[in-house]
Each structure stands twice: as structure tokens, then as C-alpha cells.
Image (cartoon, rainbow, N blue to C red):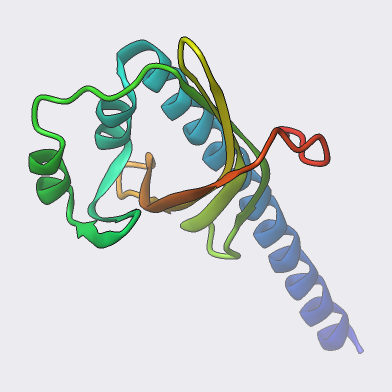
Length: 153
């Protein structure tokens, strides 16, 4: 009976540790996502995405083949900081049980001098060996207008 009790305690402790790891990773992913947005407002969209991109990044492009690899993406965006008029915030985030992969899903807003555009985005994140989060896939779509059902987390 003691053995069964100890085994149950062990697995309960492991499950709690996995939950804690997932929650901590989820918070870190959200923080990385928001930090990337802050950098985009200050330094430009392309500059921010390159700073947060994993070496094996995949960046889909509307009507084109995706750009694959950070060095290829850097060359693709060479000398283009990108817009400072786009902001975003996640309303959903998840992390793997192992705490090394996760995603954010949220809304973006792009403001120009005469228009405002809205959309949704997804970003897949991978924890690096130094503990930082880098994204491996990022994409999104346009929506007709700001959807009040989705709120940043």
C-alpha cells in the first residue's frame, strides 16, 4: 500500500511540475510576443521580426512561396526596417508539456495616415538553449473590421 501511495505522490508531483512549467512557458511566450510588438513600434516590423526569429524561421508571404531561414529572410528584407504602424496582442497562448514549444494567437492593427486595417495572427515559438524564445512560424490574415469578441490577454 505504501508503494502505491508513493507512486501516486510521485506522479502527482510530476503532473504539477508539468503544469507549472507550461504556465511559466506560456507567460514567457506572451512576454516575448509583446516585446516583439514593442520593438516593431520603435524600430520597424521587419527589424523586430528578425530580432525574434529562430534560424529555421518560416515566414509565409501572400501569393508567394514562404521565406525559409533567418538568413534568407534577412536578405529578403535587406535595408527595409518595415512599418512602425502595426501593433498586436495575443488573446490566446499555449505551451507544450515540455515547456519548449508554444504559440500565440491574437489580433493586429495596422494604422496608416488615412486608413486602419485589422487582422488575426499566429506565431509559433521555440525556446532556445539560452532560455530566450524565438519564433519559428509567423503569419496572419486580414479581417473586415476590429472584432470585439477577441480581447488581448
